[in-house]
Image (cartoon, rainbow, N blue to C red; front, top):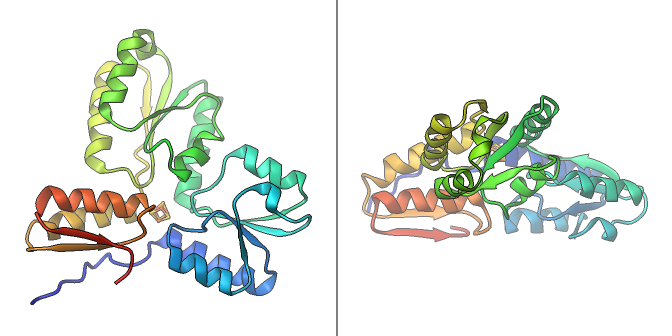
Length: 244
Ligand code: SF4
């Protein structure tokens, strides 16, 4: 049997950066991570073993404790609650995610309404939305179409279109194509990150020429789920597992 390892297999830049920061912080000061630092149970256990505890709400932070913010980011309100507890915040937010947050806030300052294409219950989307006034979040083009049917007046209002970093490109493009035709004052920023783009492209190419595909990744990871989805479009035997 011939086994091909994808060239893009492994941690992306943002995850590597967050893990390194977590390891350094655990060694230097201990403290807590608020939520899983990345969607990878093995990595989270390793950081815990190095002396950093996992907490699930700001209220679990001890006064003055160092608290690490995960790669997906957090809403503004969460950071305020940490501040109230006197926690010292260390941010492991991926710069690509932070860029979306900044673009969204800048657009709102210009009077634009933020439209975000992504999974509304994903921590990254919740985190970005938590810095916006009234973001509109759509998971697919059907939701966008339904919204505009109800709100035809929206078509001429100033808005900005952004993507979750791990959005499937075809889904993003369907939303872009629809909104470009409908909206007259829309700014578009393709914020799908390079790491995601490369992995999705390679997964599509590989899955079209092999007999079976194995996608290794945490089941909570949007990247993992999307890669599996893309592979299933081209290959009849796709297995998603958490570790190899
Ligand atoms: S935004 Fe891209 S580089 Fe950053 S953590 Fe997510 S997938 Fe990785």
